[in-house]
Amino acid sequence: MKKTAVLTACLLAVLFACPAYGFYTVSFEDTVITFPGWENGTDDDLQDVIGLPNILGGQLTYDSNYNLVSIQFSYIVTQNQHLWSKLTPGDLFMDVGSDGTWDYTVGTFGAGDWSNVAVNSVSVPLGGPGYVMSGADGLWSGYDIRDDHPIAIEGGTPYSSAAFVGWRLPGSPEDVVWVSYIFDPESAINIRDGLIIGWTLNCANDVIYQKIDIPIIDIPEPATMVLLCFGIAGLFAFRRKMAI
Ligand SMILES: [Ca+2]
Ligand SMILES: [Ca+2]
Ligand SMILES: [Ca+2]
Image (tube, rainbow, N blue to C red; front, side):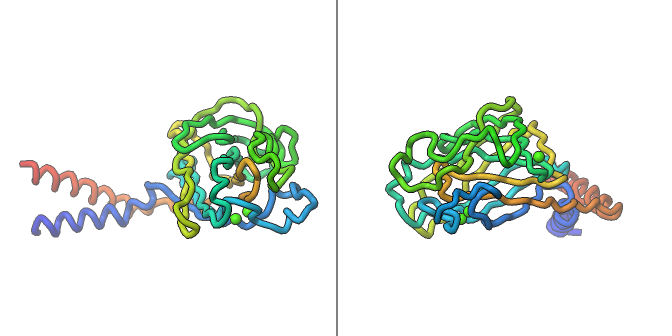
C-alpha cells in the first residue's frame, strides 16, 4: 500500500473511533427573563433585555468522565454601546444535579477580560438568602436597570479556579461575542446528573437560567476499540517510517 493510502486509512480509523474519547458540547439558548421566582413586579418582567448586552445563549463542554471543561456565552450589543464601561459580568452560578441549590459560583462579578477567577463551593438555595443584588456596585446608580435580581453570591469555600476570556465590547451591533469560562483541569466538577447554569451582568439587564441535560456518552463497541488501536498504531508506525 502506498504511504498516503496507509496514512489515510489510519486517520480514518482514528476519526471514526475518537468521538468516544474526546470532548462533548451541549448548546443552549437564552429562554428566560429572570431566575425563577425573581421577578420584581414591574415592566422589567416583560423584557428580556433592558439595556445591554443581549445574551443569546451558549454552550457547555465536558470530557469523557463528565467533568466540566468550559462554559461559553454569546452576546450582542445593539444599543447604548457608550455605556459599556459601566458593565461587568456577574458571577457564574452552577447548580449541579439541577436540584434547586447552587453548588458553585465562579467569581466574575467585577472581572474583566483575561481574569483568573475563583471557583467557590457554596450551598445557596435558588430563593436565597446569600445573594449580591443587581446594582450593588453602584456603577448603574441613576440608570434604569433590572432591580432586585441576584448577580453574585458572597463568600463560599475556595474550590478551584477558572480563566475568564473574551469579555469585550462588540465592534458593531451584528458582532456576536463569545466569552468563555475555562475550568482548571483539576476542578473535576462532575455534571453527569445535569446542571443548571445562571449568569447575568452587574445590572441584571439580561439573565440566563438554563437547565442542561447531559447526553450519556456511548460506550465504544469492542470493534471500535480495535479500530482505534489499529489507527493509532498505524499512525505511529507511519511517523517512524517517515523519520527513518
Ligand atoms: Ca437575551
Ligand atoms: Ca445543586
Ligand atoms: Ca434572558
